[in-house]
Image 1 (tube, rainbow, N blue to C red):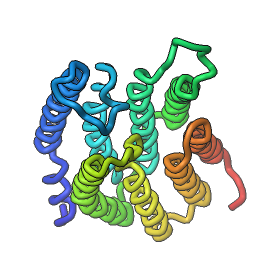
Image 2: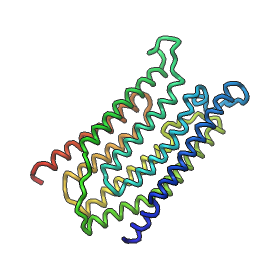
Image 3: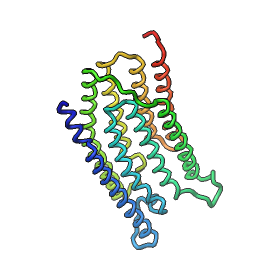
Image 4: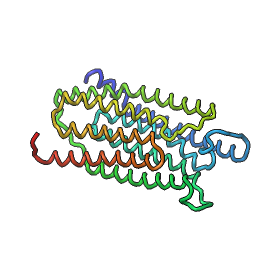
Length: 286
């Protein structure tokens, strides 16, 4: 093994993964308890919190906090899977999106208004959008995985070894980037609360994370040109980048537009993968 492989094995060793997983679970549990305590303290007037009221009205909202920590761990796993396969890292990104939607649903539940006509309240409509959107996204992830099937073990030659080492180097670099990004996002959120701003925290951190992911995917695509001339594979990887870009665009949108962009982005990835699989089974010109 070269230096990069040794460093990768140390950074992403089973021991490190278990320790990081334990750390995240502790933070998630503490976050849940603290969030729940703040909700009850605020509800009974023991303390008065004037900012972030959307997350302090109902005990169900306390689930938002542990999911935020779990999502950071999922982002870490995405980085870990990056050298394995383009397809595996893409579906990991889709899974992160589905978890973001679940977390958003926990935030939406307390805002549902049953006192008047259900569809006359915008919060109720948004809740329906998110629920239906999550079910469709979950189904599309299932289709993507069944279409992809079990990954084949490729023949390892010197070219492939070098390509995998380069992907491992990118993964190693992304670890401190992830930690810095998470810290900056947390600081940005705290700063917005202290200034009395109601910042949209649903996609906080993931806006920048998916932007970096797009840049990394483009870099990997450019590197892959040195190791493969297969048209179908290059188009597949390009299609996956377009899919990720659409997911990133959804973060800037709101309401139904955001959900449509999310679903369209993942559906595009499923279609691209299905066409790629068909092309791999037949002989064609080019």
